[in-house]
Picture 1: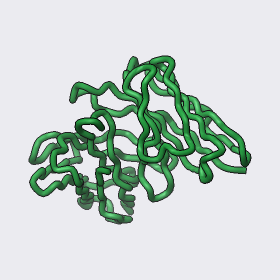
Picture 2 (picture 1 turned 60 degrees about the vertical axis):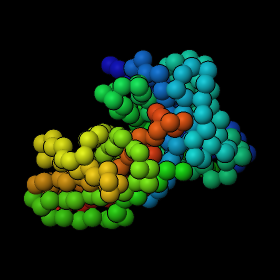
Picture 3 (picture 1 turned 30 degrees about the vertical axis):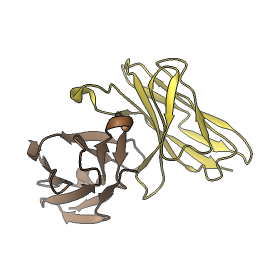
Picture 4 (picture 1 turned 90 degrees about the horizontal axis):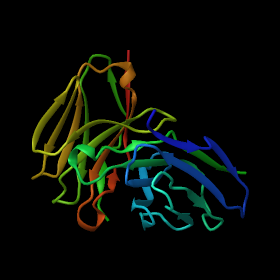
Length: 115
Length: 113
C-alpha cells in the first residue's frame, strides 16, 4: 500500500539529547513537509523540501534540522537547542505543480515528550 | 507571514443541525483553499478543496469561497456525532512560498446526540 510512514509513534527525549524522527513515503512525491502541532495551535511548518538535496526553512525552524538525500525519506532531527520540543510532529508529502495533485498526504504522527 | 484565521470555537451543535465553520485569510491573491478534518490523536485528512468563487458541494459538506472578502467557509449539513473533530482551514502559498500550505488554528466541533 502506498503511504507515509512515520516512526516512532512515541518518543522521549532527555535534556541535551538530539533525537531523529523518521519519515518515509512510497508515493513518489517530490515534496515533503514537517509540521509541529501544539494544542490549540494548528499546524506550524518546520521545514519543507520540494526536491532531493534541497530544503527550505518554515516558520519555526530554529532548533531543528533536516536532510533530503533520497526522494523517499525526509528525517527530522530535534536538537538540544530546541528548548520546548514536546509536541505532535506530522510529516506530509504532495506532488505540487498540478491543482489535482495539491492534496497533502499525512503520516500518522510522532508524539515527542521530554523526560 | 501569511495569516489564516478561524473562528476560535469550540462549536457545539445538536445532531441533525448545520455546522458552520469560518476562515479568513490575509493574502488577497491566494488561489487554493482546503479544509482538513482531524480526529483527536490522529493526522489530518482532506475533506474539501475549492479554487473558484461560489459553492462546492460534496455530500453533506459544502465549501464556500468569496475571494473579494477573503473568506472561505465549510458547512456540514445533517451533522452527525462522527463529525466531532477539529477542522483545519488551509491556504496554499504563492510565488516563493508556492507548494506550502498555511494552516489556521482549527475549530473544534462537537455534535451531540
